[in-house]
Image (cartoon, rainbow, N blue to C red; front, side, top):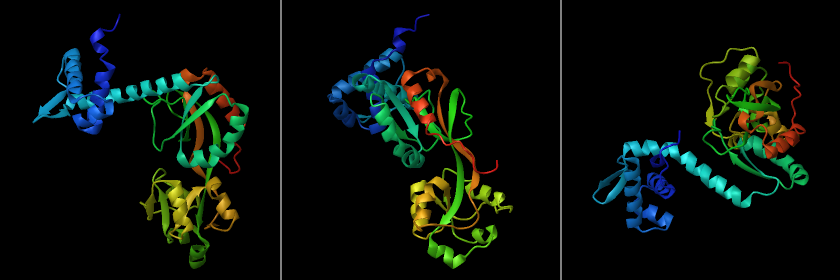
Length: 303
């Protein structure tokens, strides 16, 4: 059964509605769309007539979205972004295709990017676009073909490839270590601890792996990215529990020291994941096959 024509609103009207929600001013909408304010107003009127519902509140010549329109914009915004992305790709896509990849910023920059020159040499006709994402993403509403993410590989509707087990190690500046000289996990608990926002249970799990019951919550200060927590550790602000690959270079040069113990297995690993519906995509398959040659699934710790 064909969808009613009224349910396919004007793209210009939808863009104007989204812009008003984002910018909060009809004047700014007109400037962004290179239209007059009268033309923007007519877009809103036509959209309301087509959808048969009020979308705009008009108070003293100031325009704002109704509550229903705000909810509507929240649902259509990802679709508008997908249309824009698809249009750009249509104009610039090379013969080999394009992959839109979501990455975790630190792992992407420290693990993936150093390997990409080889990928470019072997697959120069394929374009790889990368966008950083900290939190969970939705393949259905965001324009990603695949993602590199941390977890257990149990994302619904996807397939996965293990890239690397994560092992974490507590590190700190040499001066801080010399002042505290920890001989046990209990001694580490008495040091200033640095927490990473995306892994709130990191320290609790580490203390359990050392055979002790940690307090709840584990005390310390909170950082939003591995890059900032590493800088805090380097400047002697505390002990950071970080993936071993992230600390290797600083440990090797003596800028950081292992505070106590050995690396332990984290509760999660790094995966390449992709929607099952895209499994046969030729560009994605080429990237996947190459990435399989770079994966480091060997586990050096007992699991």
